[in-house]
Image (cartoon, rainbow, N blue to C red; front, side):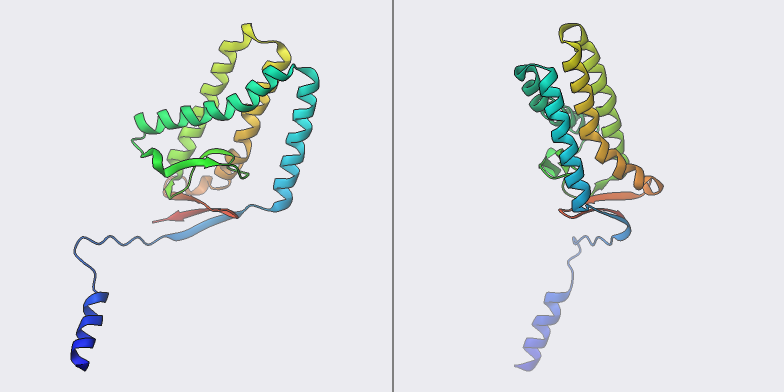
Length: 181
């Protein structure tokens, strides 16, 4: 009876031939400090109030909701076509600094960096194409909001720049970590 229990527990611990083991080594971690988030949120609200005073409510609302939706659609299309990534590994986040469409599983830092640089430049190009049809204050607010959403992400990507060749990004509620496999 004792031998049977021992054999069963030993066989349960062995790995099958199809098992994959991932070993990640932490390279760097950036903590999301609450006071940074509060300061960013306060400055965002002040910028929104200022923009609302200069623009009409309809263009203001279109920019406020349109820019994050554009970011999400663009990143989803880019990831499906160019990067061949499963869109299920990205989701909507309403937490700073990854506000908007962001990865939630381990993903290559170089892919995140490349996709965000493309998002930045194509977003600016799309806004430049819309310039003749929108007033100056709305255009300035749209450019500001586009950059403002991406600024915390670029800051974190910049902090991980030494590890961009081998780094894997993992975003948690309280920190963003860079791992090596």
